[in-house]
Each structure stands twice: as structure tokens, then as C-alpha cells.
Length: 126
Ligand SMILES: [Zn+2]
Image (tube, rainbow, N blue to C red; front, side):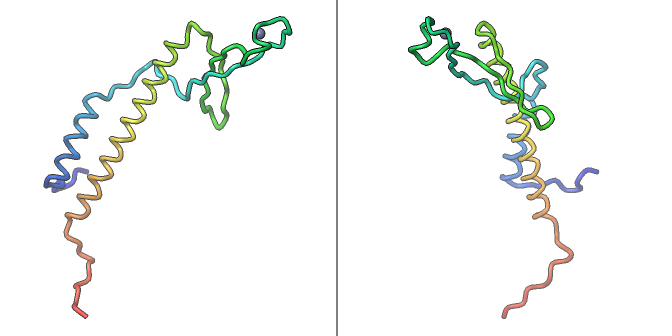
């Protein structure tokens, strides 16, 4: 059901402009990845390895939520840049979608405010 009178005025029009801006750039990135990419260092345990005296070997991993669990997937070094880009795509998409939904909520609030309230009690000065 479409609202009979969409919210008007500068706040509503700037919200709608922002909304169009987001919507026009919003396309599902089909290869996007969830979660976050993190770098940790691990010692391999060999006493003769150079890592025994240092911070350890760099290990990249992707952590994400799946059905309430948080699997950690090790990412080979050559994959890191591509995986990072796919994680960024996912985050940007989620952020844009969240912003769009918030704009819709703000428009809803404005629309609600602009509707004559039949139930409002008449104010009387005390
Ligand atoms: Zn080592």
C-alpha cells in the first residue's frame, strides 16, 4: 500500500535524494565475503626456525558467523589481497543496505508526524 501523501519539505526531500543515491549504487556483489580478515603470528615450534626468536610466521585468517558458530578459515598469503577486497565489498554492501533502511525509517517517522492525528487530545492551557 502506497502512502497517500508522501512526506514533504526539505528534510524529506534530502532523505529521498540520499536514498536514490544509495539505491542507484546498490548492487549485490555476488562474490562478497562475510566476516573479517585478521593477521596473527604463530611460531611453528621448530627450535631451528627463525621464528623461534621473532613474533612467528604471519597467518591470515577469515572469521565469520555461520549458524551461531564462528569458523576460522586460514587464508594463504597469495589470496589475501583478493579476499580482502571481497570482504570489503560485503561490508560496503551491508553498510549501504543498513543506511537505506535507516533512511526509510526516518521517512516513515516524518510521514507519521505529518499525518493529522485523529486521536490527539485537544490541549488546554492549565
Ligand atoms: Zn617457524
